[in-house]
Image (cartoon, helix red, strand yellow):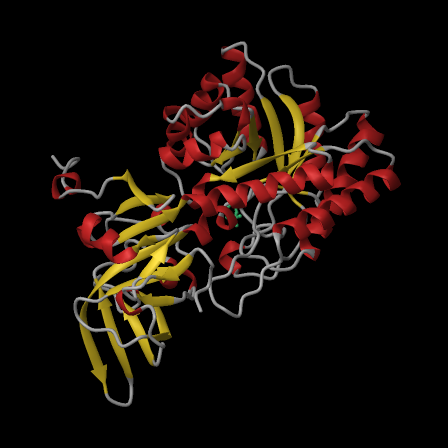
Length: 432
Ligand SMILES: *Cc1c(COP(=O)(O)O)cnc(C)c1O
């Protein structure tokens, strides 16, 4: 009935998440409200690292890609599971530092890190910096030389894999702003330079082919290409690359017809390919890193909204307007993303209506979705939009000077505030 089994209906007919009544959450914390189910986050992390143990002898690390959803409480949860973190900006890194996250388990990404960001990353001692381009390598060398530091680095490689996903979230092909190209020899030249650098230590190669990918084959292909490159580096330069970072990108279920492969199957297949290829190429098994973001945070979250107006346009469509929209969930306006929704106070009823859920921003494209099956919704009802845990809060804005919603975590039947709702004074706090 619901897209994930942490959602249910209680005796009042209200939607529950992690056993907590969503209507009580809406009453206590207000709407719009992001609700994250802590057990779903923990279970997903465990399934990834348990599979890494089972299929790859534990010779690897799971780094949660915090851009999917970052706040201090999320960093604390990931740390308590013993997993690592991937950050893509000084802001995400600062959040991790302030949450007390162990820096040796942090990977720092970004296609255009500033000197300030690189300087901060070296200062706090991140585990590795994933260098995106030759200019960054030169700037990092200079910064670490000044500090007499030798940070670990990986190189981000474009393996030339075309994953079947939305154009905006494809990253592995040659025409991409991310990373060094393999085909042109750019990546090899960079490696040649890095292995002779005194102020960085090249410990691994990284690729990330895209996001919301359902097939396992492109991940297997990417692993093969990367291992071929590791073998070339060993054979031609005599340098051993210790780490292979395969990025994230695993698809999740947004709609009932989505059928992502279990994480276990992904890790089993990819581990097999890596082992077979290494044997064939005569190279030692690298330490494996994966960076799931969406698949950890996405299924854990829902967003609660209060319905304002119901507008039926005969023969055209019915608009249900809610008290949020593109400012808290810009994924529809960005990618035309689809979601499943439920009227939380009528969750036991059948979804006989077909509606467009619209936001309150001054853009016609400000929609949560179109042609969505829903219970009959009217003013005052609470709507839950499902699987909003990733790339919603983290992509939220103050468009129309809306206040960003609060984030609440639920666990063991209890709710706790993790991020406060912005106040009107927050809206003007930097205005002079
Ligand atoms: C975005 C990103 C991820 C996470 O991708 P998901 O699709 O959320 O799993 C991992 N690694 C890198 C480098 C990324 O840019």
